[in-house]
Length: 422
Image (tube, rainbow, N blue to C red):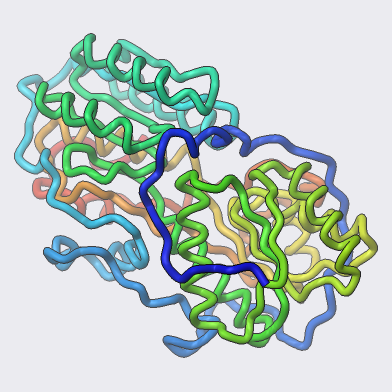
């Protein structure tokens, strides 16, 4: 059985980021038959008792100063398990000397993954629609090129824009430049990947919560016991570290769940399928369920089909249209997945950046969204009947992000700046 220490490190070095762009390769998918189970289909309104297998682990927020206390229960819940300390934003009392004609620089990451490409395109479109002059829009060609991205950040600083939108490949090496931007009076909005600094405003989703809530729910629906295979992504990158932490929180609630094998899929569906096929060839008894670090669900399903096995419950983080369609076609299949909407998230980041410039005053340095979880009872709401179960396209929806009222909660003067994300 793999050794899973119950603590995780969140300090990420540049060297561990080398495969962050490998999130997008797709292979051919097939539909199969789900494994028979004595457990009922999961229900969106069925909840396990707190502290038991199947419930969302109650880790709480890392908020020693109570900065979230005045926010709604829904917003606070999104910080459950979030690894970084919530700090007062260094931009809480900032207001640009301008009232219009803002300039912005975008320092992105290599747009290899469809999610990243859609996010960064939507961000630029949203800013341009708001009348912002984008003076620089760059990203390294290689998703592991940390020095190149830092050089691009320095280029952005030299242009002295009013604000910088930054999707860091490696957060820690960028902190000195974020501090330099702060000293120059230039706010930095960190996208997708959080930066642990009061001098940046990170607009992100809670990947730890996404991992632990779906894993625990799936384990509970399995009856709280069974043998599970894990399919990891890329060791050391933020998404993997956060998933590891969530997995450990879920396993702590479910002591009769045994992780009996671990293979590496590198966030690449073809590699994940190959790795699972190889595992099943030497473990013909199969497993009772599969947990995976993201985007590989449909390929794991196909590995079981290819190997002649029934399809067990699969944690479907970063759900695909094909896997969602499969779950909708098989209502008794134990299914838990997540939707992360790139366009809505990018538009929200643009809105938050403009509110910072116009003096709305962000209360905290981490603006955290609770990922939208889907299960067998709700997945049909997001599935188009025309979709093929072989479709590896990301499942997205622009209707599941922050409401205008929730976005307003993050600001001291919410009446300033745009009231909606567009």
